[in-house]
Amino acid sequence: MKRTHTCGELRKSDVGKDALLLGWVNIRRDHGKLLFIDLRDRYGITQVLFDSKILPSSKSLHSEDLIAVKGKVNERPEGSINGKIATGEVELFVEKFFLLGKSKELPFEISGKSKVAEDSRLLYRYLDLRRPIMQERIILRYRVIKSIRGYLDQKNFLEIETPILTKSTPEGARDYLVPSRISPGKFFALPQSPQLFKQLLMIAGIDKYFQIARCFRDEDLRADRQPEHTQLDLEFSFVTPGHIFSIIEEMLSLLFEKFLSLKLSLPFPRLKYADAISRYGSDKPDLRKEKKENFCFVWVEQFPLFQYNKEEKRLESEHHPFTSPMEEDVPLLEKEPLKVRANAYDLVLNGEEIGGGSIRIHQRELQERIFEMIGLSREDYLSKFGFLLDALEYGAPPHGGIALGLDRLLMFITGADSIREVIAFPKAGDGSCPLTGAPSEILPEQLKDLSLKVDKKEIK
Ligand code: ASP
Image 1: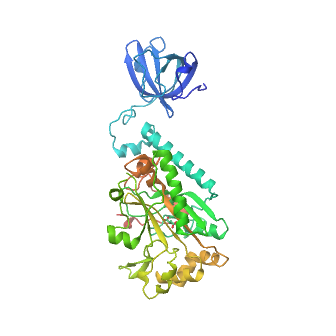
Image 2: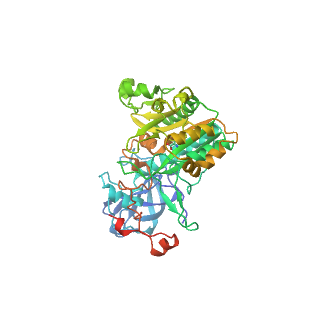
Image 3: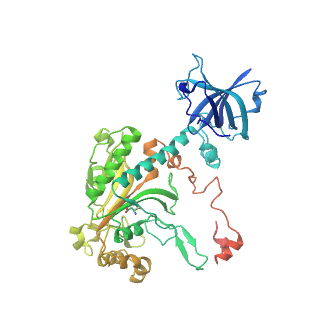
């Protein structure tokens, strides 16, 4: 049973041909002796026609049954041409059909436009993803990522995977931890970002790196946050922020032109953090009104290097501790640390941060000073980041990079109103996965293997 065409493929030029289509019953229209079905697959919809010889009872086919139909391609009679679909000039007159998969009664309508509760959509995500709007988004996501890869490849970037089971890479959130069975009592951390590995790649001589990277951050839940998200992660050697900005600007303008037919005006405006705060009262200014444009990108740069953590009575990094101070502010480090500006930048789109990065520290001595200033003891920073400090002593190039939140960028490109709309299998608002039931308890044997015990008294 080999399909000859997809459900989006037949045209007037195919009239008279035999075709075999495979698809789901989208909508059925029962006209007594004739049953019309819109047959759907991910490529489109084709109208197929059954008479009572082939299908004695129209009731034997239901929405979302999966069928194979074989027959002749006919031209639709004038008056029944459907200009809204690409196959709208033809229909398939069924001579044989096979029921490949029967569908149970559906928890919600797939072909309809009515709003479905999100918990139900996430529970039956495989049905939700059949809806054409979701298919468009998932396909668009693939195409956007493919275009990014193509563009960066042309610019000589190498896509390199970095480990998922790793050591903590601080980005200001809690780590997701994975206990090690082989080393009882020890844990891997899932990466909050590939930060340290991409820096090591620069030291390894890979001067242009990127990755479509999955990042894991155990944060308190906020609306539209995902415990895991995807970022476009880049790192370059021998760069200034300006080089980084122009690569990102060119890439975004290609994407916006290709996927939204929109011409972005380049270069994006650049605002110093202090000016953003004094002019707009925000480090994420929305310049749409001022510029009179639907999309407004702006670079905000020269953030403070530190902020003061009142509870812990110590300095902490505003970005992350690998960010370099502006060269002219280095003399202020010990005397007036809160005045030191970082060589760090954010990319803001319509008032939302969609990316951020920095030029990094590439000298061991300065990196150690920063660790000390944020209150890490020598013992602490050597045990956490000793490998990075050692690597910095072997001809480390000056380097910097950036990461863009891909899910959020896709939200803008698709016009979706939530990050969950552009992720195939997102977590629900409470961080759980309704479809699989994760997170879930594990078997006592599994805990034993890991030398772990759950303290039930601690569970509220
Ligand atoms: N590692 C940073 C982040 O994930 C981005 C960067 O500095 O390149 O936010």
